[in-house]
Length: 161
Image 1 (cartoon, rainbow, N blue to C red):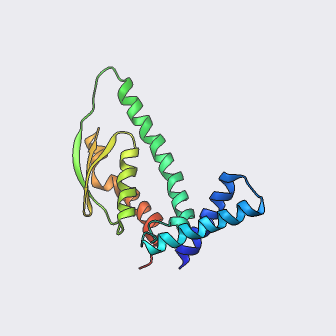
Image 2: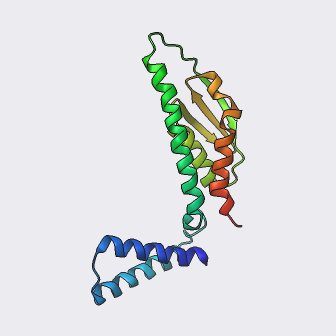
């Protein structure tokens, strides 16, 4: 039920912000369209904790700030590798086990690996992610432990069954 009201609040704010119309009739029709959209989301059973992640927004935003810092650090490593006269990369494939419980958290973790320069998530099967990295020492499973822990905390911590 909290997701339903959260969806109404977010859709209303989005509609008001994007439409820019504040005449009574237009606002009434906008409110009606928001209620109809929220009702259809519930009726079609598409409204769940993963499709309405507004209540975990502070944790997700904190995670994204941390991830941006990690992306900058990884960019520096890749830039140094590209500018060297000799190519000294040592590519490797490694399977990384994730502790994330929901599909959204696992997907967030896998996408975070791919967003980080020098690493790419190749496949995601169950709780294992096949990762390709430019450097074998950067591809060890323990290197990804902090990212796994943070993505789990950002996404799964707000999940209630």
